[in-house]
Length: 454
Image (cartoon, rainbow, N blue to C red):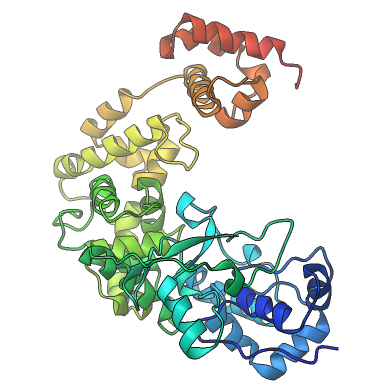
C-alpha cells in the first residue's frame, strides 16, 4: 500500500513528483519504486504526462488531488491539446484523467528538435527552490515547452540537463535535485526573444476552453487579414512569403525549430494544430493571446474563411482573367513546392498532379479550364511517372549519401525513402542520368540489381 506522497509543487511535472516520491520514500532502486507506481513494468510513465499507474497509486493520487487538476496543471496537456477540436480535447482530457492512457493515441506529438532532447531548467529557479522555498529543486512544466529557451521569471536562458526528455525504453526516475548542477545564469537581453517566450507561456497558462470550437485555422486567417500575406480580396494568401519572413525573423532569436512552409500550410488548411506552429504564426502576425485562447468569430466570418480555403464553395468569379492573374503566383508556388518536395516532412519530390494542386490551392480542374495562365504554369511541370520515380531515386540516393558520409547505401534504403518499388522502376532507368550523372545512375541501377530484399 502507498502510504506517502510529497506535496506537489506549483507547475511541477508529474514525472518530477514521481521522482521526489522515489527519493523521499527511501527506495533503494528505480525498479522498486517503479514496481509500486506502474500497472506493470512494461508501462513506463511518460515524462510529459502520467502513464499507466497501478490501481493503488491511482486511487491514492486521486484522494490527494483531482485527476483533472493533475492533467491540466501538472502535465504538458495544454501544449498538445490547446488547439485541437473541442470534441477531441474533451475526449483527451477524459482518457488522461480516467485511464492515464498513452497520449500519443489522443493527439499529435511530433519528434523533438535538437534543442528539446533533454529536460531543461533555470539555474536561478533551482537555487531559490533549494535555498528559500522547498529545500530541493524540481522539474517545471513551462521550462519543457517545445522551443522554450527562456525562464520568463528570471529573464535568463534555460539550461539543458543530461536527462532525456523522451520516455526511453530504459526508464529511470531522475530527480531534479540531483540532476541540476550549480550553473551560472546567462541573462537574455534580446527583447524579442523575451517577448516571444512570455507569449508562449501566456498561451500555455491560459485556462483551457472546452466549449469554444472555432478552428484555429480560421483564427489565423483573420490574423493575416490586412497584411502583405493576404490579397485585398482576402481570397489569396501568400503562404510562401509568410514562411520565408518567419524563418528569417525567428532564426535571429535563436529558435531551433521554426515552422516550415508545409507546417504553416497544413495549419491554415485545418489539418494541423501544433502549438509551436500556431504560437509562432500568431506572434509574428501580432495577434493578441486572447484571440487564440478565447476566439470570437461570427458565423459569417467562418463561412468567409471556409470559402477562401475551399474556392469550389464560392460562386464563379465575375472576371476569370482577374482571378487567373491572382491565382497564378499561388499555383506557381504550390507547383514548385510539390515538385521540389517542400510539401511533405520528408522533403521527397512529388509529381505535380491536379489532385495535389486542388489539395493545396483549392482549384478544381473545371476552374483551371478557364484559367490559361495557371494552366501554362502547370504544363511547365508536366512529367511522366517514370520521370518522377527517377527524380525520387536520385534525390533519395543523394540524401542518404550525404547523411551517411561515405557509408554504404542499399536499395531498400532508397526504396523506403523514395517511396518506389523495385519491380516498377526499370522503365525509369533511362531518366536517371537526366537528374544526376552517369556514375550516380549506374550506381543506383547496380544497387537495384544486387539487393536481394525483394
